[in-house]
Image (cartoon, rainbow, N blue to C red; front, side, top):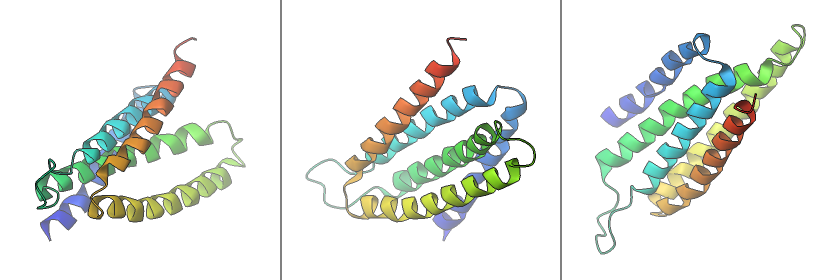
Length: 148
């Protein structure tokens, strides 16, 4: 019961930290949050206990990693919609942001099933794949921004 409440509340910091959009340029903030998401995926890959210990994942550490991932993924979601919607004209922006939100929500629903399968299947090493992809996305985003 407590873990459900903690997971539900873990998205709040991501929403609150989206306030940083007023302080930083959204593309730089996106690169920062993508990097934090990659690091949280790396933490998910550490959930598995050392070899020889078949008692399963450490529950507190697993809950902490999943809550951390939810928090930073919420922040990425908020920043990404701002960055992605900026190039559209004011008349098209609501449609563009609505389309993006629907696609991202569907992706997040699928991701929950994949994350659950990875953790319950004791193959948390597979979390390294999205960690590497998110890290490369952050570097690419930051590389595109910095040369200015």
